[in-house]
Image (cartoon, rainbow, N blue to C red; front, side, top):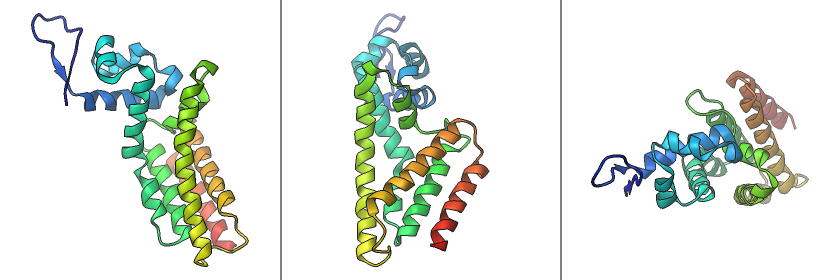
Amino acid sequence: MECSDLNTRTKGRPREFDPDVALAAALRVFWQQGYEGASLAMLTEAMGIAKPSLYSCFGNKEALFKQALDLYEREKLAYIGAAIEAPTARGVAERLLRGAVDTHANAQDPQGCMGVMSMIGCKSEDASIRDHVIERRKSSEAALIRRFERAREEGDLSSSVDPDTLARYIITVIQGMQVRAQAGATRDELEGIVDMFLAVWSSR
């Protein structure tokens, strides 16, 4: 699919642009700035299009953000689905933690988590964005809880371990690492946190 730049300064047919490329550019802006910090001027400049073209092809800023979040989840958070398929509960935890480090502390992408940044930066008038991000996170949390429930039923987790609390504990560790990555923590520092978490798990 292609969209037209409705604000082209040349006469004749408006130039076409690739919406996938434009959306990827918008994703980086939202990832770096959060929802509130990403102005329309920043977005259109990064996407290489004019505001009328943004509205025509993607809808308003909120709609663009949700599409960028879809892309972020498909490309950057695919490790979550792979982690849940690990054969053991400890393997699930390790894949999640290592995947979070790979995604949120690499040199090619913005540091930290796009969703966390957008939730923290949202004002009251943007509460719908915060709520939308939270709802998306709930589905991942629910899948992780179900996986740990299965692990307990199979004897892979002690019957004394609460799957809900374990899932939320791991998510909290990941979110903490995401914030630390945004604050400049090195990959080695984050890997050290993962190693410590797994060492504690093994010593139980």
